[in-house]
Image 1 (cartoon, one colour):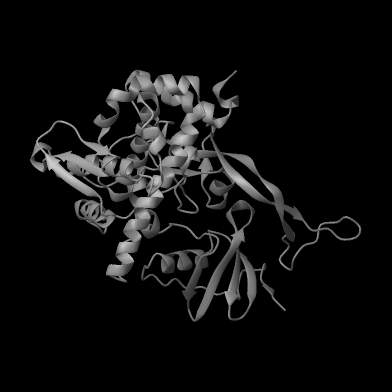
Image 2 (cartoon, rainbow, N blue to C red; image 1 turned 90 degrees about the horizontal axis):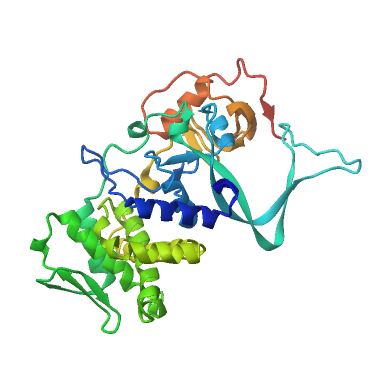
Length: 395
């Protein structure tokens, strides 16, 4: 059976096993040659949200350097094209609601005033797992270059932010002249080599964040004590969770990741994943919990310290296109993007007039709204009263 026809967790387990045996794994340092932090974790082009858990692992194992992903329909909506012959990568998501088109007594679909079918949304009795196929930006034509699509400057200092997270955690951290770092769950303490033993600050903080990931496993926090106190096989599973989590954290902070941490566990991980492929799903899910736990500590500290907060890459990144939910103030009106239509068109509501109309990305108004969204000063002339036959007045 081809790998693509296997369940997602088995696909990911097989890919990780193959890379581990080759000595290559997805946890890479999120810095390019110019020292510019890169968002290593994969994210969706349209929403700007990063993929999580098993989806993040599968996309990272694809070997793509560009972190941007999107579906075929999302590419169409922003006038990008999936290159001929490209194959998608599987992701899964939990579906809790069912959507269906409303129909009249004769069974015909009911449309709203702008020609869109009315949708009824009902909650499912139990969640179901749905699948989708996404494509990397490298597989497309029409998307901007990566460095034109991310901030030129990260607004935080990675070293300061990592140090602040360690302090905010309240973890008991001591330093000794030793050759290894470890977390002791019995005494709830982290021991690190002296700072001067590291080649650079990034190496020190990458190691410290790895041990902080273990620290979250204390019974008073996320409680992974069973993994830490049940022998080497169980601890190898804990180490896999900490490895994935510290990769997530290192990427979010822009601090990088210490790839040397995993070396002693490669054989154990291969054995575990070959025997129980679903373990990669569990490990990735627990890594997300670790990441969220530590990021919540940071957010709480920032809220208490200052209302002028630093934000992550995913929060500060402007989208170079209009997207559902955008509300843009322009020329004494507010334009709200209600949704995407076919052929890259958008459904727009203009407030306070209540006017609804469709907008193509080739229209001058689209460019004006996008410039306004991105904070640019261009003010292109727009006349809604001309050359637009799709306007309808909401009554």
